[in-house]
Image (cartoon, rainbow over the protein chains, first blue to last red):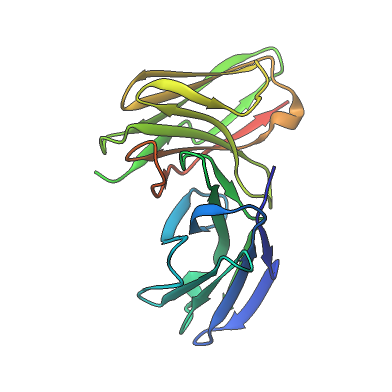
Length: 113
Length: 113
């Protein structure tokens, strides 16, 4: 069953603006990952944050994790048209090996030039 | 080579056909995955192979039959599928059994008529 929920479901912004997506999950986790998927194609791994980390940066990406609220956010700064894609969070439940990822429902981001 | 390849890109099959999807990676990864993704939905895990052994089967109907002939190859044999099985089938790999990022192939778009 899917344990991740994301909001908003869809987000439309102008190039140069920041985009924030949120993810909530239900069970305790080992790690939380974010993936990007361009229309009808495979997923690309963006960033992994471990359950004992609170914030992580990678280029224009900033991820936060609040395990007490079972939530995470992905911030994309200075967005570009090429950032247009669906973004999914994925969790692996505590006590499992880590191979069983459960994906959230995803946020469709549109960046208008 | 950091790529996961999948063939074919598109497949149309009748409900009485037998076909196979193929996935290949040459990154030395020891875990490989099959996911099913319906339109505007997140990927759903079907099978996990670890060190060429089936380790997770998410209660997938027997009309889907996975096979891992060696550490680089993963097949999904299809037989007597239903129209509701039409979806994007994604293959992924990761370095090992534990919580690593997964590398996804571009997917096979399957249509069952």
